[in-house]
Image (cartoon, rainbow, N blue to C red; front, side, top):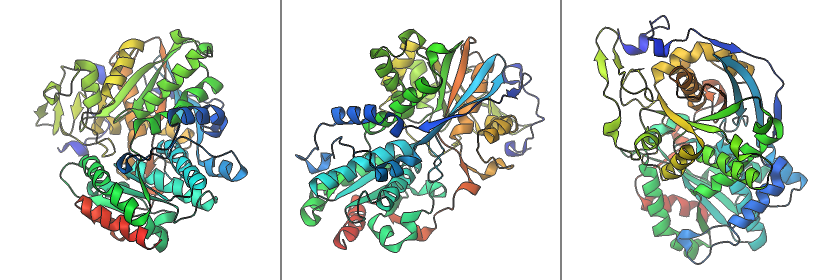
Length: 482
């Protein structure tokens, strides 16, 4: 029997058992806006982080940290930054909570918040200086979708004109199924100004290498020939600033200091930008005396077998894939199994499985920082398999549905697995003793979408490239016609 056809009736080992079950709970839902509710704090932090635009080197150009005044149009623009807090269920002795960061239907992921701030800063630079900007970013898929959604909102709300601010993204061709039609692709003029480029290389993450080469080689010619600044927005601080709102929102609606039990925050991660931003927000709260450092939550990193680098680094201090446990095939089921490391799946369909191509970062530069935080404040890491996620699917469906997510009957219709990965990692972590038994758990709902939530982009909406020269050709074509 092939692994993918195994039903939920498969007999599980004691360490995998679901016998305790997930018990859904109903509670009041707290909603807010992760940006405008804390705009003074975010605006001050942004201005302090980037005090002035960077102009001395075109390849290192930055728009600065100035954000626009919170006018009615700007408030309308930021409406997409909605967030909610739910108590969704109990598992064994742990209350499970959900921080839903995927409420924007234009993206269905947490990338909304950083992208809104990135585009808002760029629009404010254009307003103040009258100089056009091209935002450029490599992406696995979701970051690009969010930048495009933010730009479309900025144009619709009158923050900027289409020719003044553009977004160019570069995604792996292998991730094309996660790219969607949007306002920019539906309009031929906007599509030309804001091309969605795809790279068909053997390693998906090499879009970052190619992207950096393009910026280094062509930022100066683009400015010299077309008078446009090229802003390479793939910078950790661009995301940390947005994600401090997670800690501020938690402190507003369900403060850890007033909770009966301590907490663990769980997140499906590639580079853990979101959790780093959350802890940055905790730093701010604790330094200002608004929260007790002794109540700092633990962190649970959740990854998949395709890129378990942060869990490896947390355990061993390096990214050596030889430390991944050896899996043995089971001819009777088609599965691969291991019992030597509870941080890794005990059963999988393939030892190198890519559960979700969004999580593609190898040797993340954020690993040292995240490992240090967990060593200091507590936590762990767990890697999940597609098989484990499918086995948890029926148990978790009521929780996700109650939180407002559309959960298809057929798991194969799911295109973004981060939320299911995070919940599966939590349940596995509880079963295997990786989560402190005295802790309740907050799951960061960083992304969820299925076939029902998006219309895939056709080949006509994507432009293949293979070199920095190709990228420059397409960016220049839009610039010349402005």
